[in-house]
Amino acid sequence: MAISKISANMIDGSLTSSLVTGSLPAVDGSALTGAGAGIDTETTSDPLITSNPSDTGHLWENKTTGKLFICTDNTAGFNVWINVGTGLALHIAKPFGGLGGGTVSGYVSGGYGPPGFSLRTTMDKFAFASNTTASSHGSLTLGGQMPSGTSSSTHGYKAGGYGHGPGSNEDTLTIEKFAFATSSASTSHGNLSVARRYGGGCSSSTQGFSIGGASPVTAIDKYDFSSNTTASAHGSLAVYLTYAAGQSSNTDGFASGGHDGAYTNRIEKFSFSSNTTADDHGDLSGGITRGICTGQSSTTHGFSAGGGEPIVNIIDKFSFISNVTATDVGDLTLALAYSAGISSTTDGYTAGGTNVINKFSFASGGNAASHGNLSAQRNYPAGHQV
Image 1 (cartoon, rainbow, N blue to C red):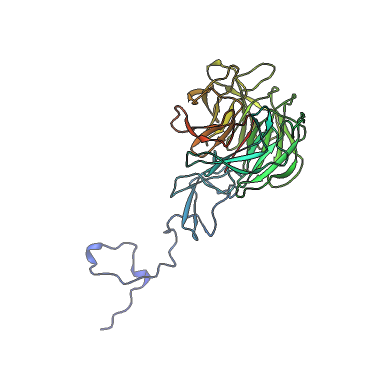
Image 2: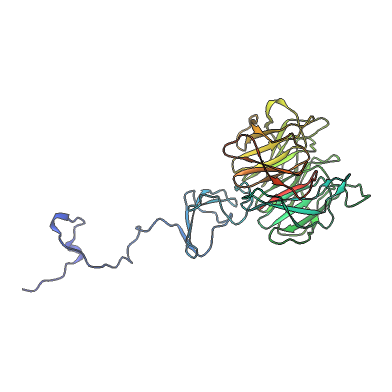
C-alpha cells in the first residue's frame, strides 16, 4: 500500500508530543517570520546619535564587530545607545548629547601661571584610567587665559579669553581648535560674535556654546563643530553672568554660579535646539554664592565644584530634569578656584588653579581624590575631554 505525503491541510495546528517519537530531520526555516532574535536593525556600522529609532528598546546589531546596542533615549537627533556588552553609553557623536563625558583623556588649554602672569600656550593631556602627571599635547596658536572650553568627538575648542601674549591685555573673540588624536598646534575655527573672557562652555553633540562673560555679556554664542565660521547668537542668559561654570545635558546647557554685580548661587538653563532666553533652574547648595567654580556633567546631573569668594571646596550636584536646590555631595581635596571642569562618563575632574588634578565619582558622590598633576600650575584654563 502506497503512503502519501502529509499535506498542509492534514495539520490542524496542534501536535500531541506523546504521539511523536524519534528525531525530526533538519528543516528549512527560511520562510519563518516573527521568530527572529529581536534585532530591529542589522547593519555593518554602529548607531549614530541621529539614527532616530521609532521607540526606546530598539536593538541595533553591528554584524561586522558583533556589538549590540539598545536605545534608551530616542529624542530626535539626540539618541542614546547603550552598548549591551559594556554597559557604556556609546554613540559616535560624543561627548555630550546624553553621554556626559569622555572615555579616554582630559585636556586643559590656555590659562596663566607662575612666574607672574605668564600665559600658557601649551595644552596638557591626562589619562582618565591612570593617576599620573599630565603630558604636553601641542600648543595653542594664540594662547590666552579665561577662555571657555568645549569638546566634539574629535577636537577641543578654546573660545575667547584674555591676552594673546606678553603685553597684550584685551579680550579676544577667536575660537581655536585642536585634535585629540595628535599632539600638534591648534588652528583657527572662526570667531565669537563678541569678544569675551570669563565665559562658561557647554557642548551639544554637534555645537559648542559660549555663555556669558565679561565685559559684560549676557549673550549665548553658538558655533558648529563641523564648520569654521563666525558664531551666531543663541538667545541670552536671564541675567548677566561672568565666572559661571557650564554643564551640558542631552538637550540643554546650564550656567551655575557666577557674578552679576555680586557673586550668585543661581543656576540657569537654556535649550540647545531653540534660540530663547535661559530659565531659572534652582540654586547651588547652602545659600552660598560663588563664582569661578568648575562645571562637570554626567548623563543625568550637573556638578559644580569649588569656586567662591572666599573660595570653597564644595562639590554640588543638581538634576538636569527638575528645578531644585543643588545638593552638597562631597569636598575637593582643597579649596579651589580658577580651575577647569572636565568630565568622563563616570567621574568629574578639576584641573588648574593649582597643578593638582582632583577626581570625584558621579555615581557615589563623596570626597574627591588626587588624580595626578598638570605639567605646571595654570589658572583660568579651558577644559576638554574625549
